[in-house]
Image (cartoon, rainbow, N blue to C red; front, side, top):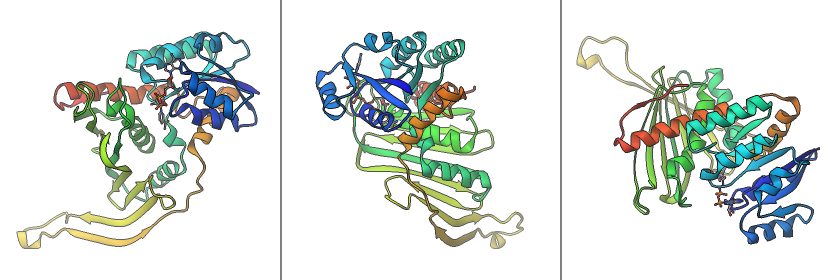
Length: 337
Ligand SMILES: NC(=O)c1ccc[n+]([C@@H]2O[C@H](COP(=O)([O-])OP(=O)(O)OC[C@H]3O[C@@H](n4cnc5c(N)ncnc54)[C@H](O)[C@@H]3O)[C@@H](O)[C@H]2O)c1
């Protein structure tokens, strides 16, 4: 039995409570939040869970094996550090921390103490993203040339981070996972329309060394909820629409080819190929449940999580470069591991 404490019970935290609570080898022992009404909500649903407004009380409990941090990003580092230093396996919601330096420090503490450190890159635990990885790895789409990700809706505005730090971690983690590569540079442009200094619309570009290009559009200023990623290969194209209830992935047998050799303008003709579209079957399971299960399994067998500290650091490396690019009006900022 793994005893878990969860800190931060606002919008997302209750989902962690529900999923950890549903796993038979896990007991949610504590939920912590500074807002008493959030704790009353949890007490109403789960009378057996202890609640507190003092995070120190959770950290000090010798019975606790692991802590999940679901507070605002500015608090991730300090809370995760306290958790690791107290010898607890630690799960941190995305993005892992507010800087590369903070991520490195957390990875180091976890390594020294032999603890599991995992980041909540939820989508890489989802059936559609796993299926996309399988399809891309099989070569069915051919060489990936271009990825276009759009994650848009009205709000929810965050007071301390811009929309790229809030929404793009999902798309960045999906792109890195599916391609299995790290970009060479990142560009980002954006604008703060509602709150000065906090961009509510951003457009990020990741450039990969094999010439693949990924664009990631993030917005809190859109009338519609859009969660769409298009993968364009030189053989086929794939559209992943997470808002679709069932057919979340559609594969299009479409491509365009330019003739390799031609002598006159008259001979030059693009060749457009229009074939069938199909939607592969997906066995949909709540990704967060798979993610929580994976965290417990990694604690038990000591293996590195799929979204461990290194994966969390990779995403923050790109977010940090994107912030630097934003300050320079969109210049390309080199990134490396
Ligand atoms: N994986 C996902 O799909 C996903 C989705 C949404 C949010 N998130 C992440 O979850 C985290 C929380 O986001 P949210 O939208 O739930 O934010 P939120 O503001 O709704 O909730 C944060 C909660 O933390 C509490 N809190 C603040 N300071 C505290 C402290 N010192 N001690 C204890 N509790 C404290 C607040 O009272 C609040 O209830 C963020 O890192 C966010 O990026 C992840």
